[in-house]
Image: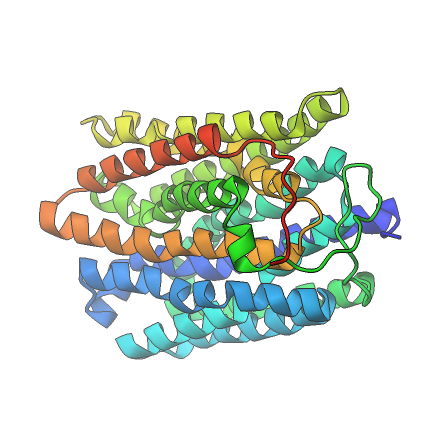
Length: 413
């Protein structure tokens, strides 16, 4: 038996707030990297900034599948609470960094501490939210990854300008600890049950499939490729968009924070609305796979318009497409997560979420480094933006040709 409706939606909202806090603690570094004082203190080059933006994902990515296995074994409540406390403390400790290597070490530790968040949250949704409500639930949860940067951008900028970057890291880190209290009060300890089917009842028990069995399915490959492509663009926006607006479009730090906020707030808003819209269509008889697939494809196509802004000489055009492309990406945000649970029902939820989040965070490793490298050898952001366009079109192809309904069972061995 899942939680009652009030508790269920309270926990969905709380999980979304948890993602917001996680992304505040990730994004604040990107805001600091746009600050001349921070760059000068650590003597950062473009390559060094690319490395710093990437290093969080080295440890975070490696631990996604192990974190999924931990969630399948021990449930969601306690592993997520422990993870939350650790990452808030590590984020606050960034305020004490005095050398480049210390920043690198702290970002690696932050990746370790946050690694449980998405496998735990997505496993909880798979086990407690039925198909007809899953788009809205996924939208609330995953949109936290957009509301986090939307909040972090003006907040971190205000703290840096008013109190300095050390105070910013400390306050944003320790502030997140408040989340643990309602989580421990509301979350149930026995949350290791099977995932639920579209009707809302528990799926039949089955042995967990091997990694090889999962990767023999087109659904798993659609998930891995599509997730990587979506997040290549997202992580460019998380890590380099502030610097792009300041350096290439000559915006002030305050103006940059405002436009960055609108970009991510647009994604977060559309993510929730499009997840709810897909649910509405599915409740009225539309195919869950096709509905979520076309929302995802539309979102990736809308995101690809960022290249138009990058290739324009007009700052106004560039800002418009920066906001439009991120807002349009929201069409895919909830649905590319929800379609995974639709394509792979009854499968070990933590394991599948771990694989999907590994693909997500491989993009987090690659996008910042490639962007920094391309910028350093070309002297502009045009080549990085053109690369984003190519990657997004590959993502469209993955969902168009691979994300299709299949009647084939996924066997354990």
